[in-house]
Amino acid sequence: MAIEIERKFLVIKDNLPKLTGGQHFVQGYFCGSTPDEPNIRFRIIDDEVIITIKKGEKGSIKRYEWEFKQKLPEEEIGELKSLAIRKPIEKDRYKIPYADLVWELDVYRGENEGLVTADVELPSVDYNISFPDWIKQKSEIGNDPKYFNINLGEHPYPEFRDGES
View 1 (tube, rainbow, N blue to C red):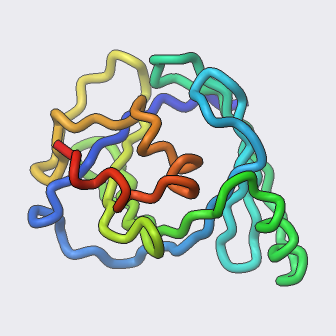
View 2: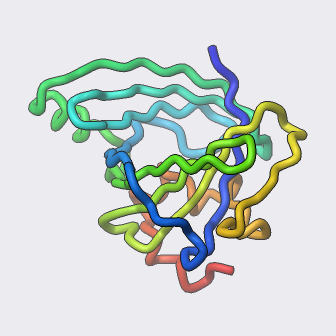
View 3: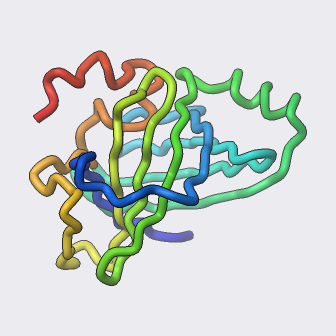
């Protein structure tokens, strides 16, 4: 079992570096909608499916995480998508090294077009982050339910983007 310590932020799109080498994936959930209950998600990258189980504590950036990978034929991937409790989301992920960390930048597609977020995994809860100039440091969204990927399938970004700070 791995422990994930992650923080998530909105970005300043105009300050982003040129994005190359991104990875497209579809992500959906079988269960879980709050940070303190287990969630089980699938992520589809080409013909590979990654099933992830995460369990955290409310208000914490620390979560337990288990992952399982398997290649599946296209028809089984379609069946898997149909089991999602909410509409799966699509996004492209870019990995951007900065200082001594790697930031994962997510550019959302489809109904969540326009949303761009960045998360960073930390070696400890109290780790002092050096922020790139494209991170909105005062817009940390890791504990904001409207930005949870599981919720973006039911309430896409355009429904609340006007209220964004």
